[in-house]
Amino acid sequence: MTTENKPSPLRIVAACDQDVPLIFQFLGDLAEYERLTEYCVTTEEQIRQAFFGPQPAAYAVFAYEGSNPVGLAVFFYTYSTFAGCRGLYLEDLYVKPEARGKGVARELLTYLARLAMDHGCNRMEWAVLDWNATAIRFYQKLGARPIEGWTVYRLGKEGLDKLAGKIQ
Image 1: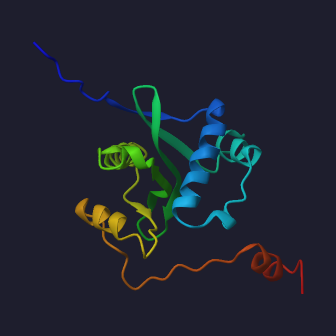
Image 2: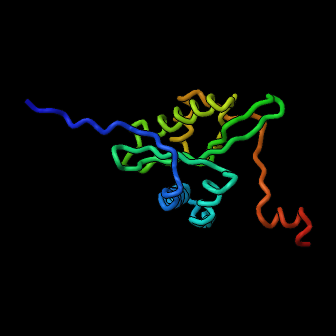
Image 3: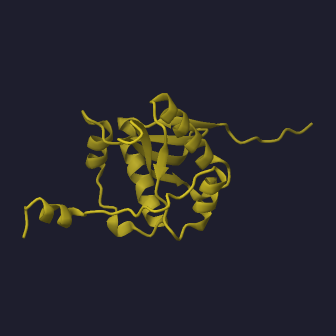
């Protein structure tokens, strides 16, 4: 009698301080995948302070197959004045290439949806690169829809400095 080797069950685990190098690695891999490596200038110390400092700005969870980390989600909480409640913003979602198509991203998003509901959130939002048709199709299958009529704007460091009067 032969037995099939079934894949290890997927586990979602909140990141801890010891995971900073792993978060850093995954963010670098994501930047490479998104063709944005020149913008990925964070350091391990910045990650440590942002995720595990006295006032965390963001949180991370990993997806593990057995003892192998295969996915990362980085998120933070927002607030909607019109809805009068919190939201969860997914900043980054990354699944290693060898784990894609195995339900890892769906499990991470399911975990975050439950977490959002547990924290009184009425929505979960994220941005997706226009060229990432695979991700767009995946998100649409989950029931996510683009927010029509809204365009994201950003002030970078120089723009912030100028607006704050720090530079002319």
